[in-house]
Length: 264
Image 1 (cartoon, one colour):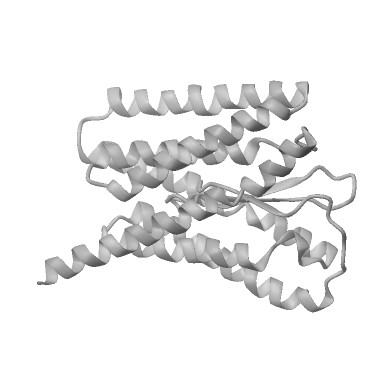
Image 2 (tube, rainbow, N blue to C red):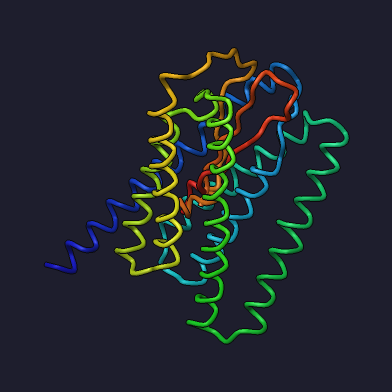
């Protein structure tokens, strides 16, 4: 009975994690529709999308290596497909300079570095636990890095006294994502999944508290492009990974904030 209950709980949490993470990934669709209408990326950077793809690739590899991680395999497979489509779409409407930068970044991060990680783990480490441990540490570190990205947007909110750069609903969804994947990690007794989402939860709560503090003193601004999110899930394993990209009316380049990989 206890085993059945544990399996049922894991299934429910896994399904919820996949559903919420999938919605976070799809949240970028309105942004890309606007890009399509304007036939321009309007200065948006490709780094968050490439990083989210890298995170999803790592977690997918981890899930395949560990075995029986069906929920991680499903959401990160979807994440890899969606982020690849986003990058291809971005590339189609980006300037020549942005295309060169994006192509170089994809080749170096998603091809060269990822291939090196796979080769080292497959050829230099013995089968079994060692491979999973080393890859788990790499995935956790990458996920924590993706979760730390919101710090830049929080600084911007404090500096501008405007919460338009940090939508509450988005922060709430990404915090919920972190909670669910943390619970999944606990049920699977996998600290590599749980620990990064502790950081994700803490930062998500800080964002919502900051929103509550600053919303009444917000300086209204007209934004030329709606606030967006892209995914790290990463770090969705974590939950590794959702990303918010936002812009003001100034000449500053649009920043994209990766708060978590919706997929882990």
